[in-house]
Amino acid sequence: MRPAGERLVKFIVNPVSGNGRTRRVLPKLVQLAKKLGMKFDVEITQAPQHATELASEHSSEFDIIVAVGGDGTVNEVAAGALLSGAAMGVIPTGTGNDFIRAVGRLKNLHDYFQRLIAGKVKPLDVGVLTLKNADLIFVNGIGVGFDAEVARESLSVRRLRGLSRYLYSVVRTLYKYKAAQMRIRLDERILDGKTYLAAIGNGISAGGGFLLTPNAVLDDGLLDACIVSDVSVPRVIQVIPSVLAGTHTKHHEVTMTRAKLISVESERPVSIHRDGEVPPERVDSFEMRIKPRCLNMVV
Image 1 (cartoon, rainbow, N blue to C red):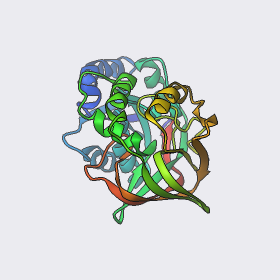
Image 2 (tube, one colour):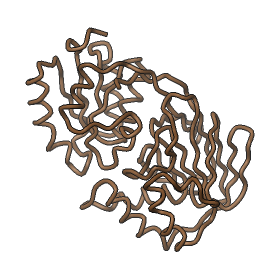
Image 3 (spheres, rainbow, N blue to C red):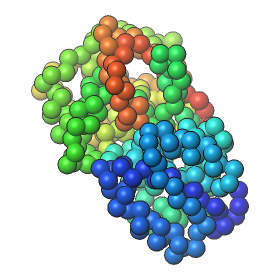
Image 4 (cartoon, one colour):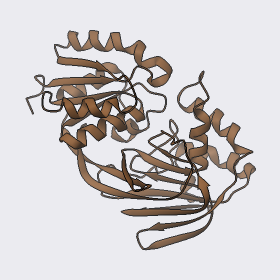
């Protein structure tokens, strides 16, 4: 990679991220890049998975491939960067922006640009979800059960962003969701019982700031797991503030652990989300594993 200040940067921009916020930020992004004297190019994604194609295709031409958007955009660019070994950067302009909380949030756009110019490249872990014989990566986390149903519900919420959008979706999901009987294997440990949610984190948060796996580390070679047994609606409401603070880990309904390999078998199909993106079909079995220190990230 070229010295700091001389790096060639490719911005891959998802214009629909953040309910259109990314599209509005784009002119300021271009203006600031020019002001800082950066050597850069911008490309707009046209469809799902297009960011992965662009990241893979242009890796040999640029020092850093930057995802401009939300966690879904980060996921797609990371998939392309993994294929090529390119260094990756992130400018968070999405709805939840959870992955950047683990990497390190900055105050403003200018600070993110300074990270791209002068930051160091650090190899981070990536998770792999095996679903219906297909391997899909995740950089931040997987949600199973209630967490994923909330993510599914949030897809229909257009006027809110971030944490407020997630909280609104929580309320809409609470009274219609039922826990499922699950068998969860975490390396050699097995949890068997009714499970309200399972959050598998490479990063520390989901849903725009819920610190479900607050002690997760992006390069420790392990996935953090937060498993919540069946709970009542009043208890969920009572516990939510502690999840925002990351102090829910002390509650008796919560099991916190770490593993390299995690598998889930459910008595009925349940929703899952992968870096906030919700597959259309519910599923009853899948597996997750960690791929250590394979994603080069500018931090």
